Each structure stands twice: as structure tokens, then as C-alpha cells.
Image 1 (cartoon, rainbow, N blue to C red):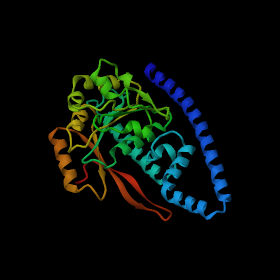
Image 2: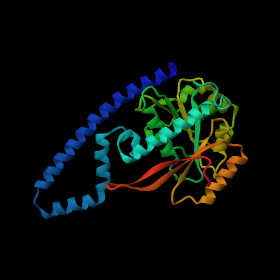
Image 3: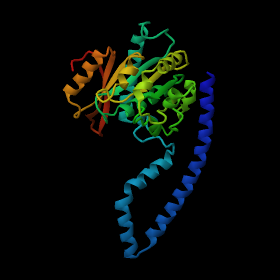
Image 4: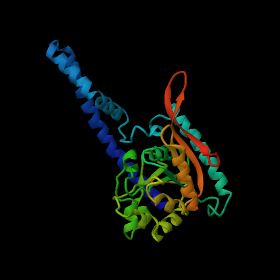
Length: 315
């Protein structure tokens, strides 16, 4: 627990830094509101025209600033499980969390997959193509799992080419996984706390030109073996798309299995079928599929949600 305690210490220091940032942003916001009131009092047509012009060009940025001032964590707004635990989308992630927990229980019944009942489940996430929502899904699921008291979650960014987890959670990019794999460092060097005390991250680190060499290395295998002995309940690993690189297969073979993210209305069935066949050829265990961006309608709202599909359903 020593390494996790060190990460928590870093988290407290980060919170203090952010408190200062909040105070500064509040001062800026106050000045902005005062300026707005002054403009409203100005009756000249020129000022009204200028304000209208600003409104068209700055509306999105202004709203984003206001949102950030209320939740100045720097965490990406797409991580809904951090910002709004009661939204319809967050509810879908809670359902996904329940399904994943049930899946892990079944895996833990197989000691060939997990060495010991108390060892963490290690799950790989990937997709057939880019931009299907795999990283946002993995981060939201990790945040949802970590929201339960006493549940420690580690999120690893193994997309050494284009990983973005550090941006989504507003943590430093380095040191990260590539730092540990390239140098003679312990895995804990790349460990970063987040604003959720139960969620820890190992970001990608510096972009690597030859990630396959590192992800398939003995060092990577040793890191995952060490992590199985740590006090985490879940370890989620985000990887590049299956049909673009071999990275996901290399990682999945070292974990308890793979969950494939599929975007509704975009990814064709033959593409998913091809990814599934490649996984089977590589002897990669597929744990399930998550269907993203499904159109979901309720009387009060219309929104996208993420749906879990058990492996075994015909693709």
C-alpha cells in the first residue's frame, strides 16, 4: 500500500494547487460578469452590435469556461461518471459496471485466469477501428467502478502511439508506461493519482516509435505479474484498434481477456466479424462487446448510451 499512499499524497498536493486555480478563475469570472453588466448598461448601437457579434463567435468557449469554473478539475466533460452520477448516461455506465462485476466473478472462478481470488481482474479494451469511443468508455467505466467505496482501480494507457487518457483525466503525460518500459524503472514510477481517490492511472508516457517491441516484451509481462500482487480490485488497459496494430493482441494475451468496443450505426458487421476472427486466430479471449452511441429515447430526453453485449451473441 506504500506506493498507493504516495500517490494519494500527490493527489492532496494537486487538490491544493487546484484550489488556488479555482480562486483565480472566480476572480476572472467576477470581472467578466462586471464587464458584462457595464456593457448591458451601454445604450449605444455600436456596443450592442459588438456584443451580438461576440455572442455568435464566443458562445461555445464562454459556456465551456463557465462549466469549467463550476467544476475546474480539468477532467474532460465526456467523463460523465465524474461530473453527473445521476444522468441517464451515467446510469448506463452503472449497468455496464454491474455486468463487468458479474463477468469478473465468473472469471475469478477460473484460477487459470486469475491467480488467486483476491488478485485484481485485468481486462483489455480495444475496438475494430479508431474513434469508436473505446477510451472514453474505458475511462468512464473505471471512474464508475472507483466510485464504490473501497474499490481500487488502476487504468493503464497502453496506446503508446495515440493514447489520450492523460488528457481526459487531466494528469501529467510523463512519467508513464513507455517511461517504465524503456528504462530501468519500477512500475510505480508511472503511477499517477486522480481526483477520484480510488482511481489511479499509468498514462502512456512519451509516444513510442516501436510500441510492439515494448508491449510484447518480458518487461511488460513482469509489470502485469507484479500488478496482480498489488491492492487493486480492477485493472483496465486501453489499447489501439485491433485492425490497425498488433498491440491489443499482445496485451490481451497477458490479461484475463478482451472487451471490444463497437460504435452503433458506423462500424459494419463484417468489420466486427473480421476483428473477432483475428482475435480467435491469435488465441485472444473475448469477454464481450460494448455497443456505443446507441440512439436511446425517453419522454424527457434523447441521448446516446453505452450498451454491453455478452460474448457469444451472433455477430
